[in-house]
Length: 326
Image (cartoon, rainbow, N blue to C red):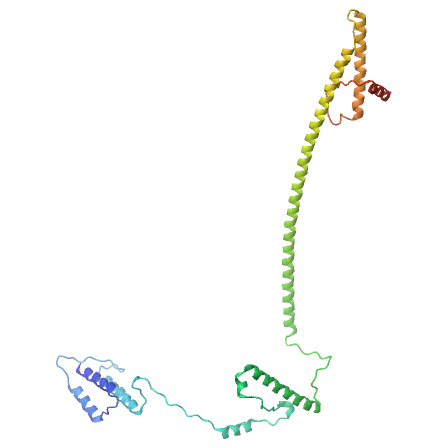
């Protein structure tokens, strides 16, 4: 325990006063004193080494070596007072051997004709300090330099007999292969077909909706017309029925008036029998003429009359009916 406390105190002294020089003799004496002091009752704890032996001497030697290294690094200025465990690395010197670099560059250069390199040197007088920070001005300077280089190089190429401009019938090789372009063309055709298919499906769907709407309107109009027709037929039947009833009532009234106009002498029985036969024959004739008249008017096509119709025409109608019957 005393040994560990002495070691801690030594580290505290170094941290509080890092520039305190310790002699090796003091360090040896301290180590000897540390080794000699031992309390009674304290048993040595066994330590396991790499060889499998239990000892504490190797651990103490490693701690002493680390302390010495820290002291040496602090003296040389490699340690800072605020960060004792931070090692400051030395800066490497800048190496710039211009002569050797130029010699290597001259060695690497190839003596090729100008037609293989096409290098043109242009003066850089327009570049100013203001243009360095202005992107627009800098791009204009680059454009002017390229234009001046072209104006210098093209006449030189024409003098050498090199064709600069592309002929009218020149077809450049495409960057993409024919197989790749075929795939692109196929892809575009598939997209166009799918779009046309979608348009056709949408058009059919709209046509179906329009056809259903038109069919519904036609059915509604048909039902309305049918309803109107039924109402008109009902009204027509009702009106014709009232006309027929009026006609029958008029016939009965005329018959009653006709019977009242006939004067019969009930005293003479024979005359009465003759009159009855005359009336019977007259009524039969009248029925026949009335039936012909109704058939001519085609009233039986509208009504199915199962009872005899009693109609008594006037004198003019009688003459007309007789002439028609003949």
